[in-house]
Structures are given as structure tokens and as C-alpha cells.
Image 1 (cartoon, rainbow, N blue to C red):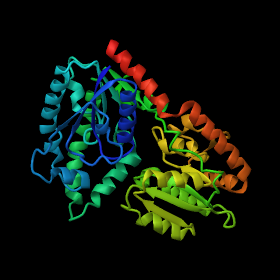
Image 2 (cartoon, one colour):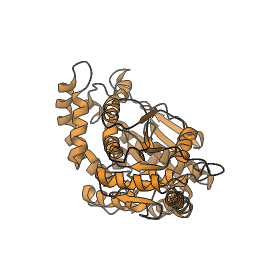
Image 3 (cartoon, helix red, strand yellow):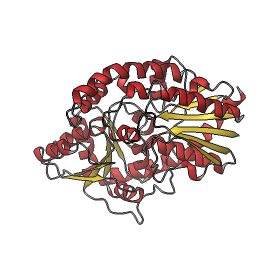
Length: 406
């Protein structure tokens, strides 16, 4: 197939998904042309441009040269103008370019500025698959919305009140625009059954599940049965959404003689002071790492007793699958996508979303290393059977083919 791929994403899980899918589709003989905006220039290691047949980067700086930096850095930017005027016109032209090339199908990823990309509205001759990682949670979850507004209120240079006012004007419209745009896709694909439910609630559209995966040749158990450190992992940002402070609270309830350290891995150190304070207050040893490369991340998985996934309503939870591939069991909240990737009592433990339940599960794996080892081996086997990128690309290949045929 000749496939147009659109993405406007910074480094992170969604960009990684775009790269893994695109590069593997190329390896299977499909032709990929990549379309993206200039907004996020630094893609890191997972840049599909290196494998695509062609790359079309559309310049986007409608007001002044520092707008893109301001968007990335979270400073005040005139989003009411930026998102609903120039960006719509740009996407209309972009859709016309894609239509003119006669592609079999377009694979469209989320847009970091608008959720569903506007181009979906104007692809009149090209069938499209929108790989929706999640509908905008700020629209449905009060906790996410409250934290979002708290972050805006703490903006530097005394701009918090201004940003809050602008956000109240803009966000409702963004959410409404996303609902219209997403439903213009020929097919909506999602990363879990849980996300399919959320997509139905948001868009009143059926979606097709295409689970995410992991590369089991990179994410592997430690050589020679690598020794486990007396620590557990908790990974990801933002800190509030990933619920690292709940993990701290849970560890404080594990008896001191059995209490492991907590290693938290973040993409950057922003807003981590509260987490450090919570660890000191609860007598929990905290190891904070930021911006580590993939080999170091794999090493941390290989040497941890367990990976704790405490995020509420996580759409899929790639961290859990990566940990399992490294032979490390998972302790996860019994919610969202974790219920689909973690088999309770076999590849890890699913628990209630409270500190006592997490503490008991962690204590069990610390005090019963044979149980942890058995679960880790089963987790690795499960990943090989179900949770690889090869499985993901096979599912997406079928979804794209069906969309192209109509």
C-alpha cells in the first residue's frame, strides 16, 4: 500500500508508536510518505523521517518566530488565534496535498495541539485511519482538568490568571472541535478495549482495537539472571497523573525491614519537589532519574523487584508491557488498560487504587522472591505471545487494508 502518515508530536509514547508502526510497515514493503508540522523539530531517536520514502515538513509559525518555543515550553501563547485560524487553513491545504497524491490510505496520529488533527475533515479522496491514543481526558475527568488548571495557575511571570482565563475560553472549543474532527475519519483505531469504550463515549463511533507493543529483542531479561536491587520502579510524567505520590504512600506502609527503595523515572525534573518532600516525610528512599536513554531504562527494569503502575484510568500502559518483557512483574491499579495487559496472579498483581492494597502487593513480591521470579518469567512469555510491535503492525496493516478497500 501507498500510505500517507501524519503526525505533529513531541518525543513520547505517541511519537514512539508512530515510529514503530511506520518503520515496520516500510519493512513489510509498504511505501510511507511522512507529513508533519515544523512545531516539534526534535524527534529524538524515534524519527520516522529516517525510514519514510519522502518527508513533507509544513512550516507553522503564524505570528512570530518564538511562538513554537512558547508552545513547547508552556508559556503564554495566543491559542485562540493560533489553533482556530491559521492551523485550520494549513490543514486544509495539507489535506489537499495528500488527496492529490492518490494514496491508498492515510494513517493519522494525534496532534499535540488539537487532539484529532484538522486534516481529517478535508481528506475527501483519501480514506483515513485515525489512531486515537485517547480522547481528551481533560473533557471527561475532573482530576485531570483540575490538575491542568493548577499547572496553568502556577505559570511564571505572573501569567497564571491570564492563562486560566484563556484556557476557559479555548479548551471547551478544542474539545468540541476534536469531537467533530475525529468522527470524520474513515476508521478510528484505539490502543485498548478501555480506550474503545472512551472513544464511544466521546465520539459515538465504534473503534477498532490495535494494541501497542514492545520490541522483545531490546527489552529483555538481564543476562545470567541479573540480580535484583531492593527497589521498585514507577515511571512517567506528569507526576500527578502517574500517581507516584500514591506509590510513596504505599511504600511507607510496608514494614521498614522489607521496604524497598522507589526509583522514579521522569522525562524531566519539572515539579518533582513535592514528590521528594513526600518521600522524606514518609521515610521512603527515593531515587529520582530524568531523561535517561533506553538502554539505561531497560537496565532499571531488569534489576527492579517490580514495576508499580498506579496511574488512574491509564488508556493502555506501555510501561507495564516493557517491564513484563524484561521479566519483571507488575503491580498495577485494577483499572483502564492495565486490566488487559496484566494477568492477575500470573504476570503481576492487579490491586485496588489505594495505598494499603499497593503496599500488600509490593510486600508480597519483596518477601517472596520465588513468586516474583515465577511471575516475571510468565510475563516475558506472555509478551512474546501477545504484546510485540510485530503483533501491533499486523493488526494495523489489516485495519489500513480494510479502510483502503472501503
